[in-house]
Each structure stands twice: as structure tokens, then as C-alpha cells.
Image (cartoon, rainbow, N blue to C red; front, side):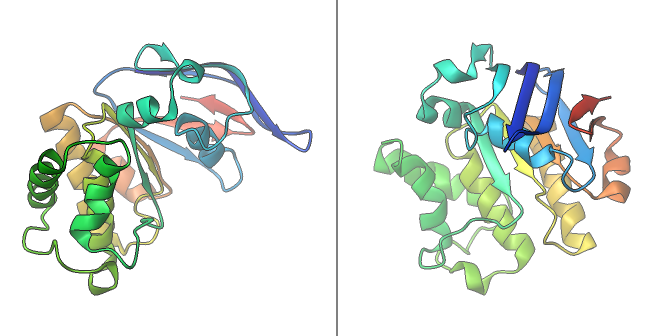
Length: 214
């Protein structure tokens, strides 16, 4: 599902990732941990195409990442961020639907799936609200629904609980685990939430001095 071979990345000749090698199989639920500045976010940015200038091989769903158009890779991999990345002037519905609009999906198809997903993540009846009217946990649920709209095979989550209190953080990780188990979506989650990650007994990768270890 996700594979990196001999991946390296430097900033201004300072190595950030060094000979990174790992493989994640379809349907796995995997945490990525490491100290601040260890290279975790850089690794994820390569996967969601925010960083293109790296060396080595990256494979997504059996295809070389560089061979995929951006819209193709974004249909395979949905992304969730610590800061939610919602548009403040758009409603909950509009924020989720936008993911389908940008790749040209039909309006009727987008509407049905958006409403279904909002129900799936526990936000039924809140489609007309704006982000500032929601709690942090609810905003992250909107972001998850948006990431799921195009039926990705994998979710890349960069500190998805970083701005949440412990109770809401646990609920979000529970939701991601549920989606993993019921729909087979591969989860690759960067987190600092040590006490929460232990709960799931999931496979954990560690970034140490730019290298990935298990």
C-alpha cells in the first residue's frame, strides 16, 4: 500500500531523512512517532505531495508516486491535519463537498455522499453550521469526512489530535480505528499521544535521526 525505499531529503544540505525504508500493507493501522524535528512531518509531506524534491523510491497503492498525477494520488490517499484546514466562510457541508468538486465529480453524487459521511462521523444535522460554531473535535470530524469523500484507500493523518483535549483526541482515534476495521482503510498516523497510541496496540514506526525504525 505504502512503501519507501532509500528515501532521503535535505534542507539546505542538512539531512532530514536518511535512507528511509519501510512498507505498510493494505488495511494496516500504523502510528509514526518521533521527537520534534525528527522528520515525521517531512515524511508525510512526501506522501501527500507537498514535497517533491527527494531522492529514492516511493510507492503508493503499487504505483510509483512520481508517476501519478496529483489528483490520482489524492484519490488514493486522503489527508488530515492538526489544524483542520477548514474554510471559515464555508459551511460544514460545503467544506466536505469541496473535495469532490475540485476533481470534477457530479453534484448529485457529491451531495449524497457528503450527507452520508457527515452521518458516519457523527455530525448529522450540522451540515449548515460554520467551523467557528463547532468544537475542535467536531471540526476534526469535518476534516475526516472531507478526506473520505473521494473514497481513499489510505488516510495520512499528521498529528490529528494535536489541537484536541484528551477526551476528544481519544474519540478521534477511536473513529479512525473504526473506519480502519469496518471499511479497510489503511491508516498512517503521526502522533505524540503516547498514552492513546498504547491503547490500540498498533504497529508503530519511529523516526530517529532521520531514519525509520520499528
